[in-house]
Length: 274
Image (cartoon, rainbow, N blue to C red; front, side, top):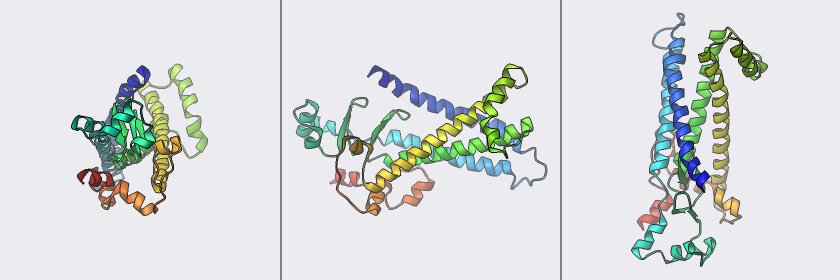
């Protein structure tokens, strides 16, 4: 448990550091290097277009990251203090099984709360993912993956111009790291250039991981399942996939795709208001 609690602190700090480094490299290194092309107009220059795209992706990634934390799943165990949580109390003291106490709920020991439609605990946000913040979590994964892809392309363009090399051959990227390490220790490669090359592979890994996780979550949503239910073998009632999508993304899904916002129409909030 101590290791998990430590990871719950280190992982968010790691993500914020990577985000800060990416922002600095984009704003102060990659984008200024694009202004050196005299053949483009100032209004539609690649630097301005790329800068606008990067800011859009970063704003959505960080905005949804904050909303994942702010929209924490409601602690159903708080009903104990209101005299409404007899079933929760039986669950926590072990007199009932999770399935017989509160269906589709889970007690997270790291967050010390009982969450509705618990999916998993995300260490990078230090928070549980449930019915209230699932949409923001998926948007966070999606835009983080796109921001990493954008940074990867910009970084490859910068390295290509700086080192006068071409990535037309797919093997060029695969052999870039070992060749760069040998050149760095021989003194032929600057430390700043070596750092950018290392970030290229880091962006590739993070982008692929977030994209894969996003696709996996979307598949579970279409089936009306959560990761916790799949892991525990809990059978859920079959529903049309459109209803499952609307439960997570709401009717204003297009607006939420472009702007970080909470899903005010989730079924859990409607149950809460009742």
